[in-house]
Image 1 (cartoon, rainbow, N blue to C red):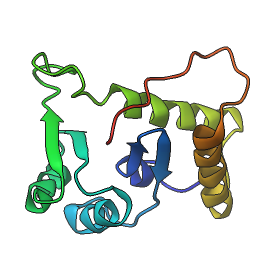
Image 2 (cartoon, rainbow, N blue to C red):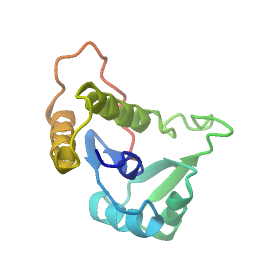
Image 3 (cartoon, helix red, strand yellow):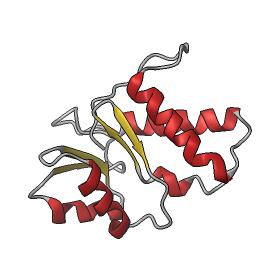
Length: 138
């Protein structure tokens, strides 16, 4: 199975849609073009303090970037919309699904990601899990 951390940094929750991208590098040079291509201008992007997200500031004319310093808190006390809990839960659910399958061959990972995104966008499988908060931008 491919390196899961190479997907983790580029999993977005885009207003009820989940977008996952497999990348070779987890850096601003890779992240920023994906944001430009897939996030509607004028959107608020919420992230943690990971260094690659700092480059979003260069796109500020198109986006509002808010971030949470996880060393201080996980939800911004001045604006409860600013958190990464929803996308962290989405990523965790995807990884648990892959673990339940005892891993996925690397050549099939893109198909599993596409299926997962489709189900998140068009409807949930019947599970005992409650639906997650899906109003976070990133």
